[in-house]
Length: 284
Image (cartoon, rainbow, N blue to C red; front, side):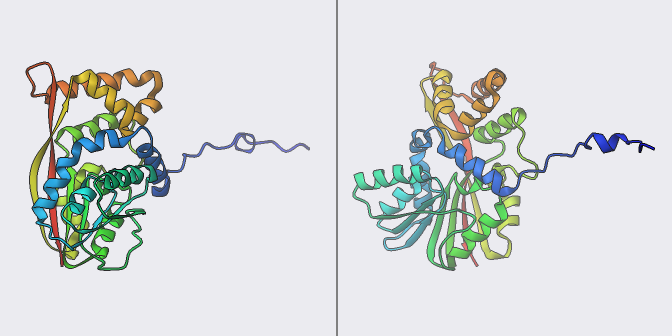
């Protein structure tokens, strides 16, 4: 007698796709930042690194680490103040851009490929640890914060420049998320621009946490010029449009509406103030 087959014997039961691991997310992020040429955008942010070093009142000879340094804005600012600077990033092409800039100014900087979540330095190695719009993008935020604290000496300072949720770039992240939802479990990088998240991340390792709201003005010929630059060179936007393909028109429309809302120029050009917080954490 032939056995009767149940439907489950012939048709596999559908299973939910596994959620991407943080390692997989990090790999995608690394590819995103390596795409385009972030240095084209990053170089315009140089004033942020200069301001951060002035806020810290860095002194010559201080041992400084720049984490997720990109093309080296904070790196160069610290080196111009005759600090002993080590510049790190996990995207080699960005470090090479920073190396070229340092060489052009005859600045002595040590460059090293490194993951912000697993820094290859001993505990308490640095007087100051910096990151401008860099470490905030790590997938494992708690691990990255722990690493910043670990390599900073007791009494030393961790200084960050982080975009805020309500600011222009924070709203850009939110807009992209409407079209390409973030991976499950991922926290917004803009949380690094809030006191609550910073206190949660640094906890007992911080003797004090000071936040100073600041504005960076994106200045471009027009909204068209901004979109051309960011679609071509800014990794997250570049990758988002590639992923959306023909459906990218809606994202383009939403980003242009955001530019129009934030633009304060009245002469036909584009001036978009973007809020960020300057963070100084004194290590306990």
